[in-house]
Length: 277
Image 1 (tube, rainbow, N blue to C red):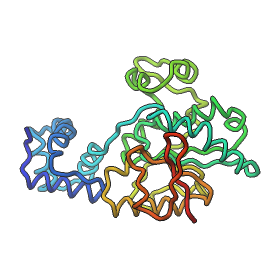
Image 2: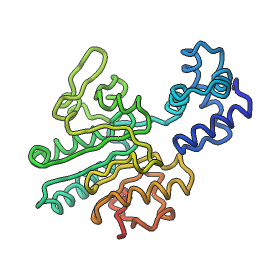
Image 3: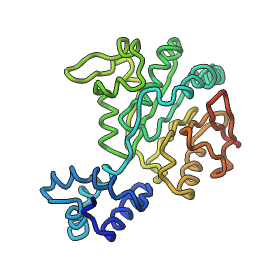
Image 4: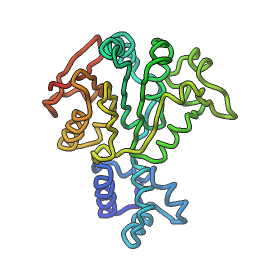
């Protein structure tokens, strides 16, 4: 049951789309209610409908930011989908290490990093399978997200028992995490490999430059945008990548019809992309 009127839901959809480009369609009213109800309670309001009315009658940048933050999707897990990580380990990273042997530099961008499982999975992969490069090369992993709260969570490198139970092998938990109260905290050798910052994918000036990016991981986020927005994001990403770099999308985002900037490649079950020019 929703406490919002149809016009209030439309107002929220416009706010979210304006600030994040995320498209909320009809039928998502229950999702909106469940995510915004905690904010309504903190504000001392009786319902999400009352929260929307406050946004309409007394606009507040802080409250608006909280609402947009709550509506971002933060589903993630360690080593999500398994097979892309095998392809990274066996093909993509070895190729990049060979190609960058002279400069001994590697720039990696994990976009829409959520609470950090993906960038830290990448850091652990490097430490486990490429220890010499991880120790002696200049490797930068930049983790960005639209949500300031997720950026802070990623930076803290702390995870609940449920989170470490999702996709993380027990051997890696014992090697790279320390029990800290009810949570697990990553060790410093993993934490210092990842830099965090807020970035909005539809605001190019907020995106990292990094002097040319070798690998972009923007997995399971493009599905929340319409086609013109996806094309704009991919074009902006392309302009930040080196000519022989790699782009990895989510398993349901492998259509090449949105951008001629990238060519589709496949290794085993993993589809990835490389710049065409």
